[in-house]
Length: 274
Image (cartoon, rainbow, N blue to C red):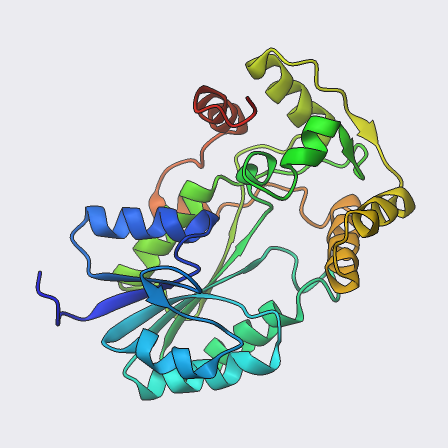
């Protein structure tokens, strides 16, 4: 491998899926550019001057959508002009059913479809790691989430990374959309009970109403647009749009996705909820 070999630009290279993808690709000898606002390769959606340097030498891009949907088409066009010939875009499962959850994801999907080069879209369920790494970690420990009996087949971030690595480096996936989930759906109450058993902690689950959840998020100081997006996401989950397990992991990797119990055992052993 040489430093001037074609590279893969991994956006949000320090994030939940990005850092795992960087590790997975590098383990196979691929030349990877891990991009983020403060990582190895500087990339900031709000600073277009950082885009072209980040794209230098890249032949493929793992694309995470911007919050501002107006930026997606410009970035994709600039990437193609810089020599990128393949995009793998991470999106959300049910994005076509959950309304206004993420206009940026919708715009990113549209941009890669119109790019004129190879593209694949990953639509993932909520990550298992949301319980241990940021989004739901503290609400989990507090036992306060706005979900009832509707189940969710949470997907492991490593499965997403493994799928993305294959799509970025293998032929045969052009113009495909893959829904990724875990192998079985479970309710939030079951997920919390599983984590409580693995950690030996008395974690109690209290179902909040949507109104209570919005009030708590606002009280924590989250911006109104973030609170609205979370409200839309949970409404879609409660409606069952994400409840059925999907077969995308098996279609791409030829194996079953990682089970939630496996994720919990590994995260507990690593001290995620200590």
